[in-house]
Image (cartoon, rainbow, N blue to C red):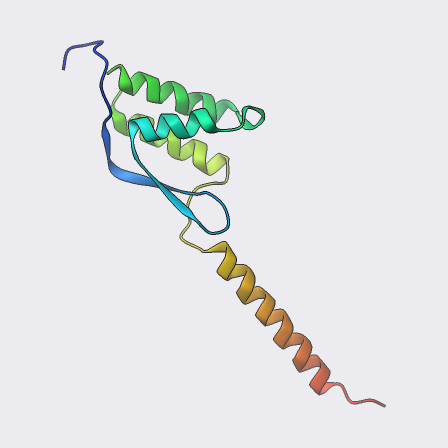
Length: 115
């Protein structure tokens, strides 16, 4: 590829998984998908890591930087925005915590002897 030429969409070697709410995961698989996700990000929540990620995507599209550098910038943005996929299902985690609290209350009630 010649210097300064614009790249069409490029698949990422390893997709980036992000949490999109209520335990749902979204896989970002390409440069265009990263850019589209960033463009949809709420303006009020755009910080320095957002700006770096967006500029890195633009630089990767222009062939100025390696795609992996843009992916890394996107990962940093995701972590700072607290949308990095951790693999834990938040709905299941909350459900399990509720069950534990309920069992603890039942246990206390059974062990309580009126005096």
